[in-house]
Picture 1 (cartoon, each protein chain N blue to C red):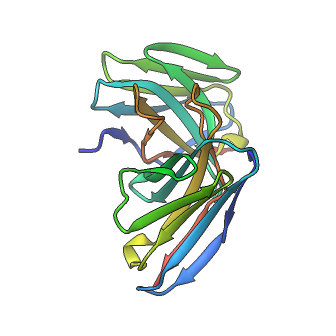
Picture 2: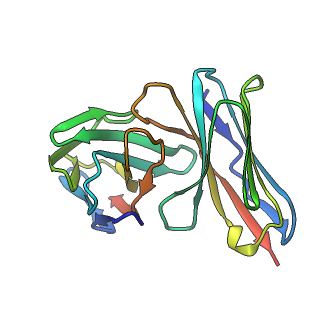
Amino acid sequence: DAGITQSPRHKVTETGTPVTLRCHQTENHRYMYWYRQDPGHGLRLIHYSYGVKDTDKGEVSDGYSVSRSKTEDFLLTLESATSSQTSVYFCAIRPGQDTDTQYFGPGTRLTVL
Amino acid sequence: QKEVEQDPGPLSVPEGAIVSLNCTYSNSAFQYFMWYRQYSRKGPELLMYTYSSGNKEDGRFTAQVDKSSKYISLFIRDSQPSDSATYLCAMRYTGTASKLTFGTGTRLQVTL
């Protein structure tokens, strides 16, 4: 599992509530990614990070923000959750600049009512 | 139109069959191609990685890239029930900080 944990693993929340998902890695990898996975859309990149305090937007970043104040933690925040953000969220790490391999965490299943 | 198209299945085959999974893509700038396997309620795991055109073999798995047709394939020989999973293709352009574009995944069921 490449030392990646995600928390919480499951969450049910209400529309308009702020939500923060955490990705934690134990191996000090520089590159970290947040994806969402939905039926009919596959995995889509939300945000990614290439170092502490260095982040950039992905394909579906609207409504999401991220922060990375430590190498090991990459936080994804939904400032005001909407039902369209009901999804499974995966964190991934890339273990080096010279590889495309990404290792994924176990996922967080988020339901917004 | 999506950049990467993949038949969602499900694809059901008997144990021991040869399985062919495919993706088509529209952008000729894609240079790096991957196949991920995802078991139910788990994160994807990398199976195969190829650069540009050609074949790559690893055990029972063969990945094939045909850039002229914008078509990639994953073949599984002697399929096993443990191969039952969703298979996702992924690809990226050169110089994009490993920002991958994924297909929607094909669900495979290998029956006894």
